[in-house]
Image 1 (tube, rainbow, N blue to C red):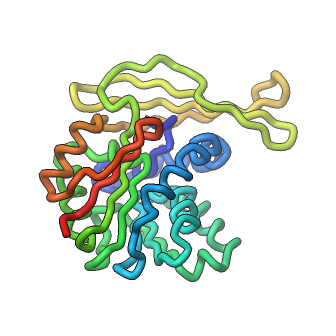
Image 2: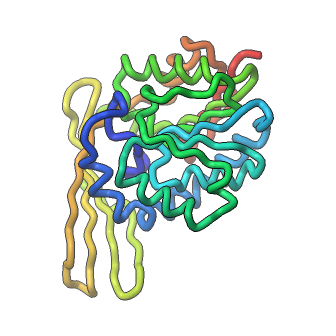
Length: 257
């Protein structure tokens, strides 16, 4: 689990927006350490992408942090950012509005991934903080959809969401930040639901000195899967494991030429 930075709150890409609506206000501020760690690794894993083969798909683009990282790593790529949450899309669209260079080559799709009509040939697919939001049957559809969409030899970069298994996680502060005179903290804890899933409880607190100004709580259910399980699922869909980064949990798979 990457400190709660998961974008698609429902295994089928549909439903209410309670998690992302609560998190959108704090998302970018809390995600700064995460994106700083992931961005250079993502750029390396995407270095060989043939952008002529088609667009790059960003599954669960959220507020656009991953989308911009992809765009910066691949300055010639057309990108399709798939994001079902209106709250997260509002931030994403504001980000694009501020950068005309991105606005001209990034298409934002307001649907869940499994409800999106993808281009026939994609140069790459990225899914950061997303795969655990699909249960096992839905993940099989996700893998099949990715494999069908990729051009021969193209890559998919998937993040393993920690802890990668169903286990209780006691509450901890995973990040803190400042903006102006205020201090912000992000706290998380996890409670198993059954053998396959757990619920993450995310708490966002805003302080003026030692005075608590605001506390926002959001919960979302995930279906954890370790890298070994995800690799088996990807191989069953016809994808080949290519490389992995243990520190970030990023896995790269390629479609058979």
